[in-house]
Image (tube, rainbow, N blue to C red; front, top):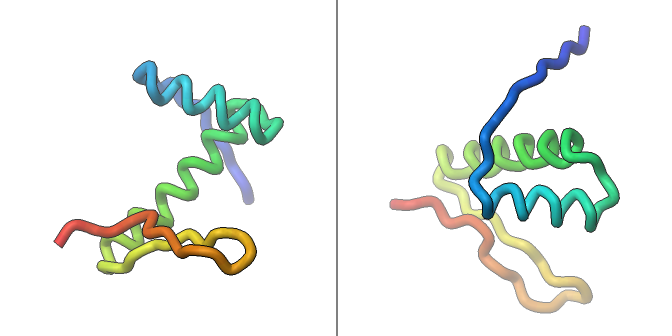
Length: 72
């Protein structure tokens, strides 16, 4: 059974701007964008807990960029 909940979260101006930009860029509503953000944060948090690094590969086999490097 899938359930959902509604929460209210005060956003700092930088987070509000990022939410608006990501929603507009991806053509998604704020709720969909926030759902994706929370899921991504969960992945990053788990990687940090396990001491793993997260990389982003550039298109076409270009450079690999370190996205998340957990603190020692």
